[in-house]
Length: 85
Image 1 (cartoon, helix red, strand yellow):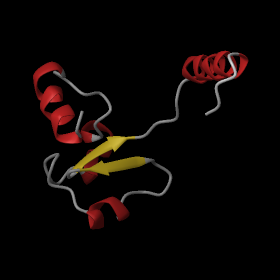
Image 2 (tube, helix red, strand yellow):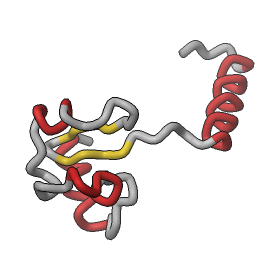
Image 3 (cartoon, rainbow, N blue to C red):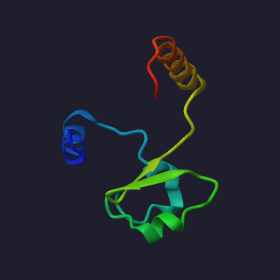
Image 4 (cartoon, one colour):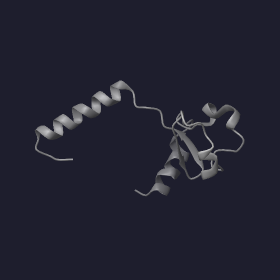
């Protein structure tokens, strides 16, 4: 599946994307999502992690502990089957 196909599916199935940074940016919210540039991205505070994709800023918060535990268990299970990552 291509990235553009995923973006089209998001329009249909995703009603409110809580990972978009619109709320978190507050005072920085001058442009609409989809209009941000690389210059806007570099102007963001260094202590906040964002990703810029097709002009949309996404909050890149650290994964939750549960997410990390599940990922670890999957890696252990794959290692026990002899598969290598």
